[in-house]
Image (cartoon, rainbow, N blue to C red; front, side):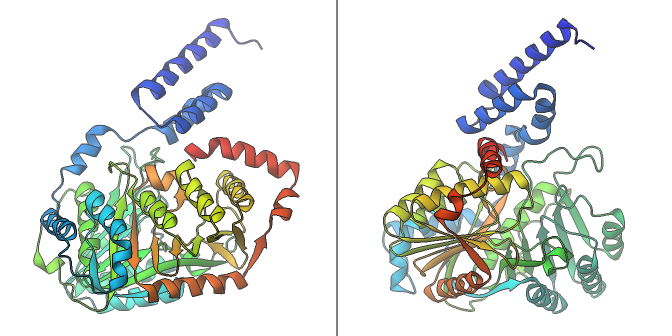
Length: 480
């Protein structure tokens, strides 16, 4: 059966119009533009459908509305801290913090990320231990519980969380839950209604006009935050679901990194939650001192840094680059995806070529095939520069951790890929304390025992089929 000439002409015309829109109207970066043009060229009809699902940008109207949300008194504190750094009056609890003043100044000036120096931080790398601690803190909550998760599942862990939250609601504790509509697309109405009937509030982030038909793959809220009574905060990689306890047969043991925080940084986590809630909810949260009850608990200096398509700068990526370029001895990276843009890849490569001990750990198995083979291609580039690459074998590595010189670290939700840096809403803790950085380094060493090393010889001996998959995935990496 022949395709009528006018149909072919229409397809060509339609592709040209869409290509012009991508080039001139959306003002994407060059790599993403070329990737979408390639998709349109090789698969015209399907490429358009893929573009509708993956390629549409967040409208300026939505971004600007978000930016105008109240900053809950944050701006005044930021300006005061900026002035104290610029005039040299900021009191640093540890002299070695001066070494990283340019890093926390950058986050403060460009992301309103206040530096707090009075935090106690507990590190979790096992899901059972993390959720045991969180459920215990929920059990002890007296005023409010705020949860923000990309994924919430109505499975055994989800039910445990729901039961604990409903019990607290019945005791008079205020409960708010914000979940991403795409990440939590399997979350049924029964789960939501059950908590709402008890008196809790739930909101979905960027829901579709037609329920269960969400084509907004991009611009998802990938953040994971929990704030209890304004005093305790959780931040990191674990979502709420049985697979994060290692119950998924495909992935097996789930290796992640999460932090429990007490101290001034909880105020900044609370503000991040409220800003996100106010964007998604029909009822805004206004400033109330009951939401900001944190007390000094330790000596860890840290900043809570967020980024997303509503941000002028790719702030978390800039933080990663700044950290890596400051390295004198070592850079340890754990990430499920390693698909950096040229700027970040060059930073890691330059560090390795300069004699810095660069070590990158990725999982042995993909949860997204194209993403995995793009990752494999990029770590191959690092092998050529002298970096050491580990493949985690025990289960699935989902941690998003960077440690530099065993002095500073970052833990949070941002993967090393374009999606996290430009398309999704993320939040990371940047940590300025040697003891905590050394602890995270020790966990990296422990994970080496459960890993195999990918050598340059092994990489070069990969099959032609793997090389082909790498080539295709690398070309598509700007839009993965």
